[in-house]
Figure (cartoon, rainbow, N blue to C red):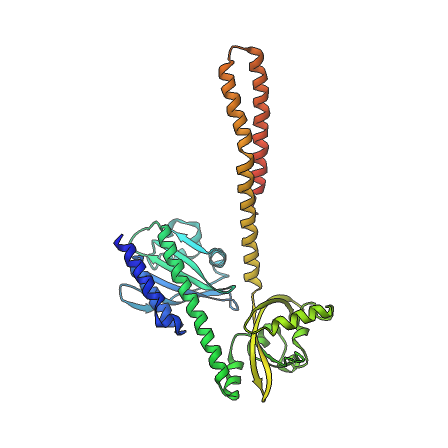
Length: 374
């Protein structure tokens, strides 16, 4: 009870943190990881951040409770540990009670688990809108720990604070961008790794594109300036006027993000999330559009939704169909006990028992087919 009250008090303090609301992301992450280390009684707590371009996850923030300091963390390449990497990408909560004896840690056992003396690990994904930022991991070194539901809830709340702080940081940066002089604005614009365009809101002609957009789409700046935002669509040239109008209205919506299929210079198609706001470009009204590639995240989300639907269908079928043959079998067995000396009745009941058993076998076969998750 004392520990629970302490956790609630810490969460309340974090929710009121200036770092949370003022966009000081690094400081907030430090504060959260230190709190996790003490309240969950673990020796280490870290925040691992995904780098989609390099296909790796890097531990940028790792708190060492014994020395009360942040130390340099590891980097995992997808190529070196594909199963572990994919688990971090696809599972919301990663529960590892015994880190030395689970298949999940096989790929990182020699390089990470054993050198750091890890006994148990608990992780949770951190999302911003529909993009996975990374994973929080708390790590127990002193003993094997069986993680509880309360541990997971506490970690989930901590993840929401990190996501909220990241959102605040972006909002403050975007506000700052709009207040910069045009020269400074374009310096920040060009150097940003996030793909961005500046376009004419009347003609949708691309006026400028930053290095992130050039890297993502494959066009150079001169080629971009010969295109419009309409030309970037996967089905450009084969759309109706109503399709064009819908696209124009949504990409011009203030701060609202919309999803579209775009085509790169090499003709590969991907899913992009676009949001934007008004700006000025060479003393004329313009708009800036931010384009985030969400292809992998959208696919993973759709796969999760399909899996959930499949499990719900399985549960519904099981609850409504397995009772019938089981009830029949139990009823027949009771009748057999009462008519044991009546040979004719016994034979009829045995025939009915066989039918009920075959019915149950068919229900189980269908259930197994529904549970085939491959």
